[in-house]
Image 1 (cartoon, rainbow, N blue to C red):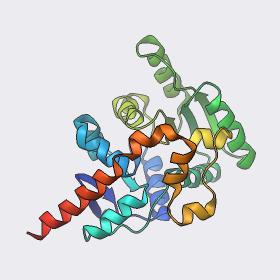
Image 2: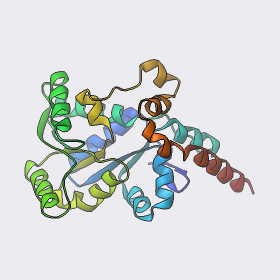
Image 3: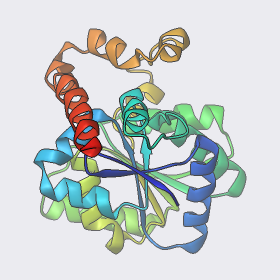
Image 4: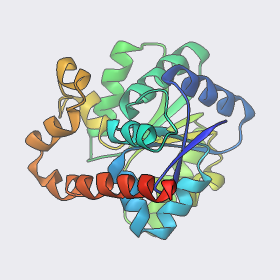
Length: 245
């Protein structure tokens, strides 16, 4: 599979449809696979977190969840086919899961959110087989081990984890092999949207690639995370200039 490297992070050059098909293959081979949906914030986080960078480097599939990453690919003369929003990729995977009979487990977010998200997902996809849910506010040690054992016992084909970046990816990298789950995806705030506790940006805002700004307005506390965007842009431009020398 061809890759596009953006500031040290290798993105797979796939469309949304191709990503879903790739994930279907991962489910079939029954070996653990980590799927990462990365945006500019993810890339900048990896630049200052070596462990996280290594996790991304070992992921089975890294897709461009962020128009900034797609822009970077163009600037670096290694274009990506399209932006693949994490929530849209996951919803496509869940639709496929309902058809194929794949088992799904939801882990993360506040207490009750994963369960409500599962309830609403089943309302839209009655044939979806959700084999368990659990919140993300578990402590390390005995409580965490119990969560891991619970997931392993449920034997899901797809594990969706909403613990936030980079915790969700690091956690999966550490425990995915033991849990023996074929496909795991870090989904960030998707549970809240499915549960109805948060709303996604209107379609017209998504079409003009300003969903990140909509989320900032709705969640001002995100300003610290978004503040890395100018640094990302400058870093990409510097990388392009350096490549010309």
